[in-house]
Image (cartoon, rainbow, N blue to C red; front, side):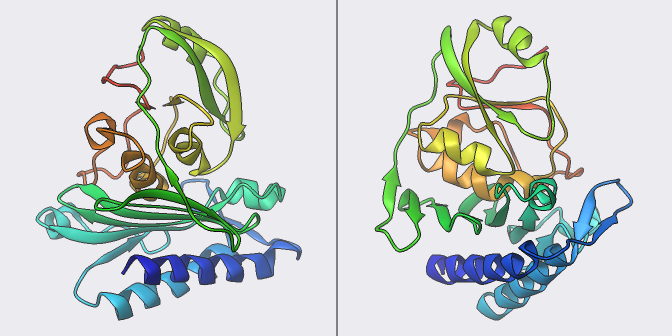
Length: 255
C-alpha cells in the first residue's frame, strides 16, 4: 500500500508541475485561502487513486470538505489529504509546496507521504518501518532523530508566509533560547525536524488536520517515542489544530 501511495503522490506532483511554469490563476475560497487549478487537478488524481486502492475507506481532502462530525466520529480509519499544501508558496514559485497523503487510524496517522515535486524529494513514514527521505532516484535514507530536551538552545522552523515575532519570547518562557531560525513553507517544516535540520517547530498560527497529518507521521516514525511526543490528534469535532510545539520531549503550552 505504501508504494502505491508514494506513486500516487508523485503523479499528483507531476500534474501540479504542469501548471507551475504557466500563469497561475488564483481563486479565493470562503476562508480567504487561495485555490488554483493545480490544487483541484491533484485532488482528483489522489481521491480517484485512493478509492481504487482502498474502496471501503473514506477519504477527506481539503478540496472536498469535511463530513459532519456525527457521520465520522466513529470512523476507525480514513484517508486525509492535502493535494497541494503551501498554495501561497506555489503561487510565489519558490518550490516549497507539497502533496500530503495520510492514513489515519484511531485518531493518529499510521502512514504519511509528503512529496515536494519542485525538488523531487519524497518523505514518507509508516508505523512499522519508520521514516525515510528519498531524493530523485537516489536510495531512500532512513530518518532518525531525537526529541529536544529543554532547557537549552534550539534551532526552530519558522514559516515563510506566516511570521510571528512573539515565538522566541514564548519559547524563552519554557526554557528554550532560539539559536537559529530555519525558514520553510508548507509541511516541509515537520520534515526538517524529522531529518534533524531543525530541533523544534513551534506553530502559533492556524492549521487544519490535512495540513499536518502526513508530515506528522514522518516526524512520529523518525523519532524514538515520537508518537508519544507528537502533540496532535485527528478526526476532532473541529478540524482546526490547536497551536503546537513539535519536537519537544514533553507537552507544553506556549502562553
